[in-house]
Image (tube, rainbow, N blue to C red):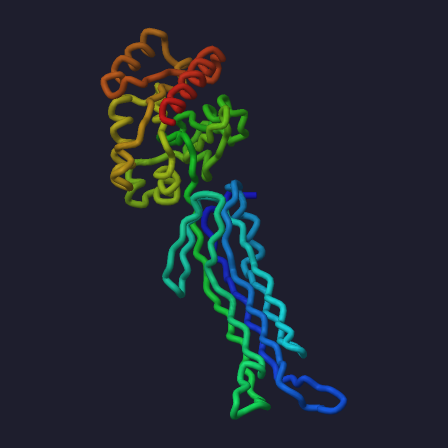
Length: 323
């Protein structure tokens, strides 16, 4: 199943049940006092956050959700049953926009939010009894439910986001650190969707490769970048294959800041990747240059288990200091 981070869902809340005209009948009085019950309320439409980033993909074949209708009132002031609420599970990080109401909600934890209220139940004839009208034949119908379209956009929430140009080794890094199964290939845009992994309880997101101009929508820029601005920290993955590692870092940072100026304030580390492709001397020269940008500079090759473990230990320590 392909990762889905945008979907529209049609939602309808329940109609309220009708109030009814009924009488307190006895053998001696076939039309005693009024005792028609009220209708039940219609069910609400509720969204609930859950920790499942793949959930939207399960809704592609079922995009209509309806709450239950309220039951009609009954004899002896019997209240109609309330309609069943419809709870729609959505990934934490979802931004939900109600198209008709022009209202937006964000699910940032395992919370429940009522997005559409069910219709009120109608009144039975006992509500209309008065000193002047002891046998009312009046009742009211239940109110209709509401309908709308939920425009849902998922923005992943992760402890650490891996960013870099295409083919920087991010997916391989994620696989090495977390035993994830992200697709790996030696060409641009191997990763078309974000991949997630767990490192000692920290969620790491491999954000698809950024290209220059991504902040202006080039490539799949906006689709990729929206998953970055909710991460708590970043790893800038810079390959030794780049001609100028300093320029590569600045170009990446520039794209992120153009998309969201707050990205400049996120804690980060720089990781020099694919170090098995250069000599130790060349690697050290690159590291020393990158240290002019940050005190948190590391290097790694997925073919060197020692360097993978060292970086894993360092990144966990880095994340713990942010707590």
